[in-house]
Amino acid sequence: MDPRVQPPPTPHRLREQATSHPIDQPVRSVHLALSQTLATRADDIRAVWLEAAARELHGRTSRGELEREQAEIFDALVDGLRAGGTVVTDAAFDQLRGILADVSAVRARLGFTPRETAIGLFALKDGLYPLASPDTDIVPLLQLVDQLGLLTFEAFAAARESIITEQAEQLLELSTPVVKLWEGIVAVPLVGTLDSARAQVVMERLLNTLVDTGSEHAIIDITGVPAVDTQVAQHLLKTVVAARLMGAECTISGIRPQIAQTIVALGIEFGDIRTRATLADALVDALRSGRGARQKGLPA
Image (cartoon, rainbow, N blue to C red; front, side):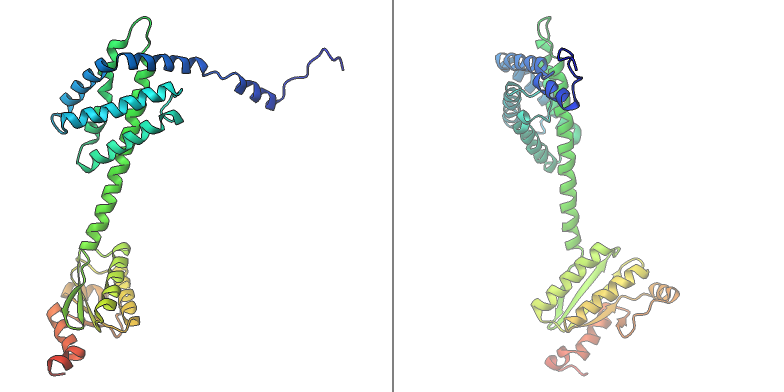
């Protein structure tokens, strides 16, 4: 083979050549120049930004708090550009992304709307427009602000989702109280639909209460449950079985005529589980049959 004839480059060699001559070097130079422009005109930009954001937020946050947030965001933006950042996902903007995530989470908890949260950042464009000149192309900066705005919206949505999840868990716990009615007797008044998640909470709280109080009888009152189907019945049966394994007896109360007809129509059988029409009837039954009867002298 003629030594003067070079073999075609291999894919590996092509990748080496591509990485040895990065094509984004001009882009980084542009952003570095923009960082210098931002630093030089910082006071003017931040003053216009502050006025635009305050006007849009209509007093939803204090001017001092808004100025502090903007100062942190602006400084992190300039630092990221100086470090060679070109897009919001670059490592150079790690600090800026963290700041925006914190601001979004705080505003989500304070009840800000997504628009109010994002507009506080998009208002930065009002301060950037005056920078435009034949020698200064601000389009890369405006595109970067758009990316940051989308990031802010995503962080806000994630924070709201987390808040909603926390509130749902808190409501779930509040909607499944375990009440001590008498010495040795506890009750679980259920209101609303009984799904798998709520049934699990009911079971856990009931079993923990049985252990903590040493109760021997539990009453599960379904007066507030709008309908009983096969799934609800299965949840109730599992809860009763779990309580019995803890050494406690269970009574299901609140069996209304409509629910009784539905249970019969669906062929649901509660076996030897005691059922009563009202919570009062179930309490009397528990007092008569349990330790409460012996302690209080009630007739068995």
